[in-house]
Image (cartoon, rainbow, N blue to C red; front, side, top):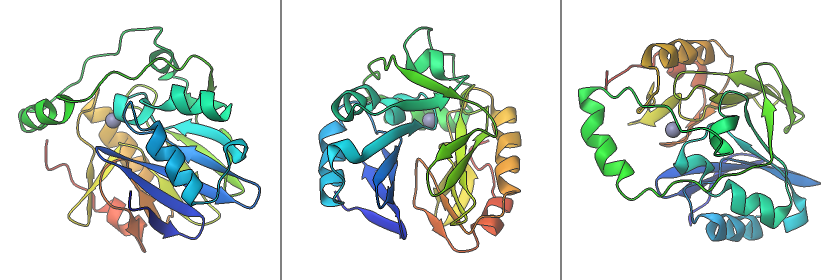
Length: 231
Ligand SMILES: [Zn+2]
């Protein structure tokens, strides 16, 4: 796997269909998202390359329950004995307690979704989940602020790291061709667009996404100029 150094302390793990992120601190690390099911060996290998020992993985944060993000949460949480946090609105789906809600796909998204979802196995339930909500703080880069961004999923969250000026956006926003776009495959597109606007109001220099490359430098402007090409 080609690890991507985004900014000092923040590394992107390209896990095929989606990205996960590691925030490194002197005394431990935080993993944001876990890739599709079966990604645990690749994530463990990446942590080893980064010099993070199993007991140093302090926590796992899930931006949302989708299988390509929460797919290896159960495996990795068990391996590291690390707590898992997810948005309160998504926790029942991460735990496998409730059937997942339907997607609201546009015509442009339907074909793309058929291709992307074809080989995606369902995420094994991850039962021990700590629920986080808007304005909660996660110990990461000092204090990372949870931003509730419903729409992509009911309980999607983003992480705002005010210290380094970084946004980890999850799938509410994606990167395509160097520009920010509304992430595809939403449960409520109108709500997702409103959530995107909330993220675009944050003063961040760097933005990272579940899909696509990070935008490094003046990300705030790129987010304000985001479009919805699949709408
Ligand atoms: Zn998603």
